[in-house]
Structure formats: C-alpha cells, structure tokens
Image (cartoon, rainbow, N blue to C red; front, side, top):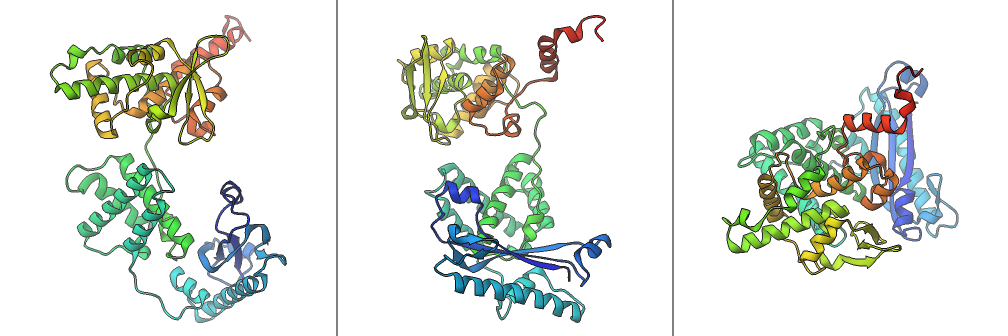
Length: 424
C-alpha cells in the first residue's frame, strides 16, 4: 500500500541546540505520505501517481534528548504514553487510507487529518485573525520591533484584502490562487498607494511565516498555503555607490539645503554623516546607535571601529578609513542619534538628488556599497563576509554590485599570462 507515516520533533536539531531545548518539552509533528491507490510505492510512482503529504502537530510533547527514530526512547519519563499515542495515530492513518480506497474516494487533506486525530467533525472556519494576533504577541519581545511591526502590517493588509474581496479569510482558503490574488491586489488594486513587487512578496513571506507557526502550534491543519511561491525580483547587480558618489554625498554643503526648515536642515546633515559612515563600516540601520559603537586603537597604528551588532553575539572591528575618521571628527568622535527610518529615507533621497545620483538610494545602499567597494579592491571575500555577517555566499552576493566588466578586469589581473598574445 502506497502510504507511510513518520513522526518528527517540531524543531530541527540545530534549532534545539541553539535554543538549548534538549531538556525541554517540544511538539511532535506527524507526516503522512500517500498516493490515491493501493499499489506499492515503486509501481505507483512509475504510473505517474502524485504523492500527497499531510503534516500536523500532535497534542503531545517530547524531550529531544530522549527521542530517536521517530519515538520516545525508554529513558523518556513519558515514553509509554507518547509511544502509545504515536502508534495509535499511525495505525489509524494506515487503516483510514485502506477504507478510503474501498469507498472509492480519498477526502480532502483537512478531513483526512481530522479523521487521523480522531476528532468527530470538521470545525467551522474562524479564529484566523485571533491566531495572527496571538502570533504577533508571541513575536513581541522575542524578535526585533521592526519584525513585529512588519507582521502587524501584513495582518492589516490581509484584513483590507478580505474587505475588498468580500470573502472571509480562513486557513483553508489560503492557497496558490489566493496568494496570486492577494499579490495582484497589493501591487495593482490596493486603495491608496499600491505596493511594489518586492513589498508584495514580503507580505506573502510574512504571512507564510505566521502560517508555519500556526501549523506547528496545531492551530492550522491546512497545508494549501505551502503552494504559494515567493519569487522576488532582484537586480543582477544590486545597487551600490561608487567612491565618487559617496564623496559627492559627503560634500553636500549646508547652503545646498538652506531652503529646508532649520530643524530639518540640521537633521538632513546628520543623516548624511550616518549614511557616509555606514558606507565605510558596513553598518546596518539597526546598528546606527551610538551606544553600540566605540573607537579603539588598532594594533600597528590607526583606529578601528568596534561594532556591537544586534544580529551577532561577538563585536566585530572594522579599520576606520580616512573618510570615516573625518565623519567622526565632525561630531567630536561620538555620532548623534539617528532619526527613525521614514525621515532618514527621505533625507537620503534628497541628498542623492543634490549629489546628482540617479540611482534609488536607501539606508541599506550604504551596506551594499561597503561590500561592493571592498570586493572591487580585492579584499578576500571571507573577510568581507565576517564584517557583514553573511554566512553563505548566496546571501552575500545579493549585496555586491560587481559588474561583468569588473569580473573581466579581475580575470586579466589574476592570470595575465592567459591573455598574452599567442597564449595557448
């Protein structure tokens, strides 16, 4: 019979070790794989039968250090109860699949799941937004304020889409078609300013993160949402500034913003200095905090910038360039506090326009600029990645705006014999 039942802990081994959950109780996830026939797997697949998957959380928990091969080990204090529940679910799933085949029809995944769990009837849809609110409260205090705010904004957009579409949102209706309609509404029909393509996909990504959490918690039994694909548009070469463009922003004079209100004039010059400093140190916007930064003497002379970043445990040190030292000297060695994201983005756009830069420039452009300039200078990629905090080249290359022309020049520089006239 083409059906199998497996049991896993809710979290990966890496997450369990990182969060020190080895001795804690964590959820157990069940996965049922099946095809719509009674043939063995090999024959069923050769006939082109689609393998369906159901995943859901159980109402029991286990301690990771006493878990192995899909069961609680004999040392687990609750091993008899846990294994009895697991065996009962596995036997019921296999029996139900046979009964469905005899009846001539396999029901929806939601009904199959509820039958496996032994529940009497399918519950009425509802509680979606209540669960979303619970998830956001869970995130607050455990994640950054920006992430929790982004999730709340995603929930608000889903509510707006529900009113526009005229159909209630529930776990069971969120599938590939719903995701496409939601993305189209965000980018084409939303009242007021429509979202960009990438912003729309960020909302879809945030929604899927909530749905994954809801599934792990057992709030959601529908897996249709996993059909939604996140396809973000990315430039072949991420936007970064040249050294000349960085200097052009640095050289914006107070008289060039004299038309602004005196307070905003002061703030925009402060934004200028923070942005330029970030191009020299790879600062994230979340690290634009004077309390996280200090200047220390470097071995062999010069100065380093020590960064206590939010996303890394250990501080990193970056040698201060001449331009970075000039930025700090302008403020007596201690940078003033930056503004919130919205005015900073506005100021950076104004500064770029004054400097004659036609590229769309944001706070994150500074970080990309640092990586791009260091890569172009021939600094080993491993060193740059230690500073930027990227663990994989795939993520790192999203930041680097190196062109094919630069690649060609680097090849010629690295292997000049290859390009000599008459070389074999």
